Structures are given as structure tokens and as C-alpha cells.
Image 1 (tube, one colour):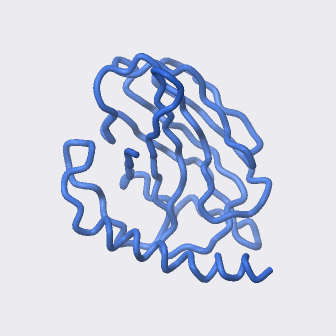
Image 2: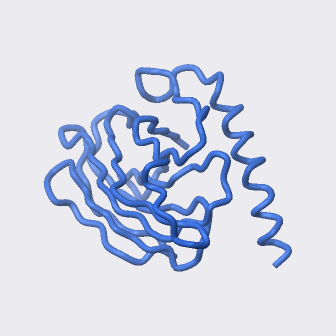
Length: 170
């Protein structure tokens, strides 16, 4: 219980540190500056990490400002540049029950329910092979149709800032 309370109290501080770190960011892996987290809400975040040989893993999550709301469920769509990327698979990470599938080249739909209420869980892993060049923020768009969370399973969809997609390359 103490750890959960500590994590709940630390989340706004971590979000504030993230905001400060991003506020003066120069060009990111895309062609423009990294969006700043100046307004309260949820910001889609794509994190790229190397996978197995020849693979890149892109993980979708939601950053919260100021933070502290435990997510319950999500539903949405992510599009990517199919001319530059080849999707090997789309999977939901541990702790998320639901489904993810490619409905057309460059378009993946997902729906998931968090098994444990956590504030910023990974929501979707996309594994790409045969990519041409470096991944950039402009290669992706994310649209959430439903986000619920909090003690009363509130509809949080209106607070998602899909126009402020964040991209992090590790």
C-alpha cells in the first residue's frame, strides 16, 4: 500500500519533470520540434526500441499531465507509413486484455482493458521489419475513440491530445 501511495504521489512530479525536459527540446526524430506538454490531459507517446535482428518495436502509451488517473480501457487506431514500414505483428503487452489487428496496410485498430489500474501503461506494441530509414514522428498518427479510467470509470476521451503526438527513440 505504501508503494502504491508513493507512486501516486510521485507521478505528478515525474510528469512535471517530463514537461520541463520537453519544453525546450529542439528537433526530434521528426522534422519539427517535440510538442510541449503545456495543457492538462493525455498525450499519446510512441517509443521506439530495437527488437530482434532487423526488427523495430514501437510502443504506444499515454502520458498524463498532471497524472495520477488509473486507466481502465482504451480503443482507437494508429496509422503508419506503409511505404516505409512493414508491420510484422501488433500485440497487446502483458496486463492488457483485448485485441489489435491490421485492417489495411498502414492502419491498425486496437481495443484493450487494463487488468490492473495503472497510470501510464504500455497499450500496444507494433513490431516492424524491413524499415527504410529512421523512424520519425511524422510517419504515425494516433486516434483514440475511447479512453476510460479513474475510480468511476469516467470517459476521458475528450482529454486526449491526439494532435500532440510525442515520439521517443531509445
